[in-house]
Length: 535
Ligand SMILES: NC(=O)C1=CN([C@@H]2O[C@H](COP(=O)(O)OP(=O)(O)OC[C@H]3O[C@@H](n4cnc5c(N)ncnc54)[C@H](O)[C@@H]3O)[C@@H](O)[C@H]2O)[C@@H](O)CC1
Ligand SMILES: Nc1ncnc2c1ncn2[C@@H]1O[C@H](COP(=O)(O)OP(=O)(O)O)[C@@H](O)[C@H]1O
Ligand SMILES: [K+]
Image 1: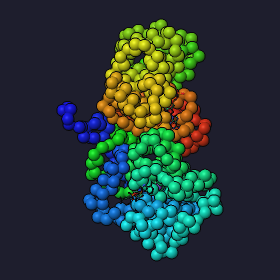
Image 2: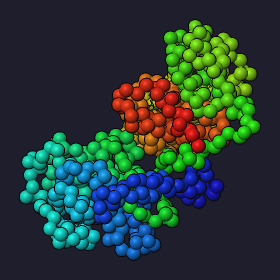
Image 3: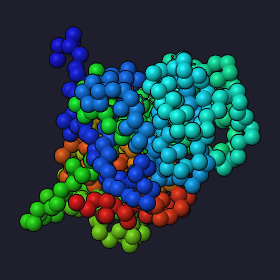
Image 4: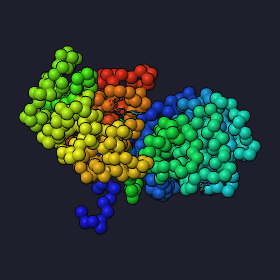
């Protein structure tokens, strides 16, 4: 490509990572009708991660092409918000804190809709609406007209608030352009000290939409309902401290908007739907390839057993486990589906013939492990997952062998730092992760909440499934196994990585629907794979 020609954001992403508007059917209570009636409504979520400039342009574009007036768009945004808040919190007392920009406008419109259907809402004008945006002032007037209770900030004492009241923050959204100061800063600090459950609309106030590192005081929400798309600042996991759990709300922005820059894309349910296909009636096991798992040093058989079970459930046709001879019996008893070979029995032919390889779970850091890693990397096909101890050994080598192109490396935070070197803050980490992916031509899966995947093209994919129940020993082995299994038949490695992290997280999401988040065992994830892969 001509060096002067910047690729469009669409060219940057491979075709197998398309922009999608995902349709999700939600059952909602239409608050403007009657709370007894439930309707089904199709919501659309974009998987684009955008900066504040592009979000603003998207709003303006949608107003011009679809809504005609920004008030109509705001009305629709508030309608979606009111439906979700009514559905989840209708029996609670709410206090809505409103600023003077359009985030404040959302707050006044939201309060009107909730007030009309009998919710207990108090509204606090944190900033003077009359000196704010037209949309804010107009919605303030509409709320006044219906007689809803509105107080000014200086008339209201947060300290007297009932601890059970939910605080809804509509003070600042994407328009905040500098850290909070003076009275506002002190006000947010006072609110943060309260024990109440807190919700932020679009962004927690004080959070700068484009900044990975927040320089000032930010509202600390338990839940953030963000409008239409995932914001750049959410990429830094440290900001989860302020956002709490993030949910996206469809506000009806038009689908034909072309942003000038896309930070990355979210991995959502559409991946699962697009990637899965039924097996042909005349399939045979070799069509799905064999997955070879190398790991399981003495005393660490469990890691390869879990990775193997996960690969098996994810659809590979044949499974082979290569582990320490001492583990032969336990592995064969636990995984009769797999063939077993010891470290000594591993030949170059076995490595070269495998459709996919997972190396690392329970591998240990012995001299033998080191030799196995080097031989495997030098001879493996490109369908390889390098995980756990294999990453640690690789990072410690003075002259590491070349990583096979498009291999998938799955470090958690500490392993990532061993691989790419020490980092200073999220921006540095992301830049180094991207640089590593590009330089080595590999796919790096940085694990954790919102697992972030980078590839050789500079593409950033962010997973939306999963929860803290995954913070447990052994769940990483399961992930490596799932990706290894998928690599046997999913055509592109980036898709196998994205699909793997999504399924893994989704299994955890399914688990917490019925079990407590602390009780998950990695094996529970494996048991959930079959239903998630059902086409
Ligand atoms: N029509 C639209 O454009 C829509 C906007 N929406 C909402 O509008 C929000 C963005 O609205 P705005 O652009 O009005 O921005 P905000 O509502 O975030 O408010 C920004 C206002 O605060 C001022 N300000 C910035 N930093 C400040 C600081 N540190 N201290 C004091 N004042 C400060 C700015 O000058 C501006 O007037 C979104 O987050 C979203 O909630 C939604 O209603 C959807 C439609
Ligand atoms: N708080 C969290 N929210 C979502 N996912 C998490 C969280 N903590 C851990 N995970 C996921 O759990 C897995 C843990 O992997 P890893 O740390 O390698 O575990 P182990 O080495 O013990 O198998 C990763 O897929 C990671 O993304
Ligand atoms: K807000």
